[in-house]
Length: 119
Image 1 (cartoon, rainbow, N blue to C red):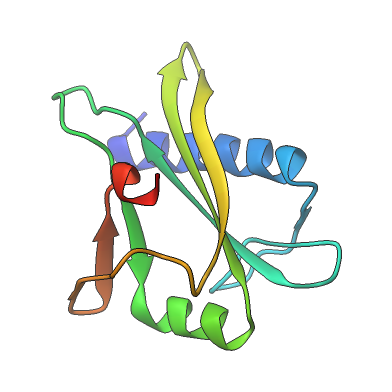
Image 2: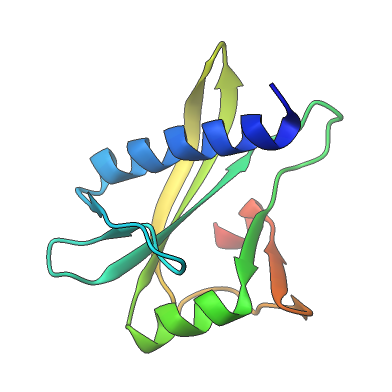
């Protein structure tokens, strides 16, 4: 399995766990992954705790999707996981309103957020 295929696989598993924990309904489109019971959009972001090379995982936020989420008064769910066999173990997760993120430093259209910045 290629690295990007693995990342997609683990991201999908993290999404499912977030949907269950926060009682969301999957509703995928380009700028969000799910909705709360009241219809508010939620973007689910996941990051591996540590990669095989020892580097800490990060969340990537995309400018145009972040703006859409903000306009819709949406939320993020952040999931930090580690690989366990063919699955994942969630180490931390949290739901945050899109207006309550740490200061984002944009590099073009992408902002990189370290999990420890969300604590």
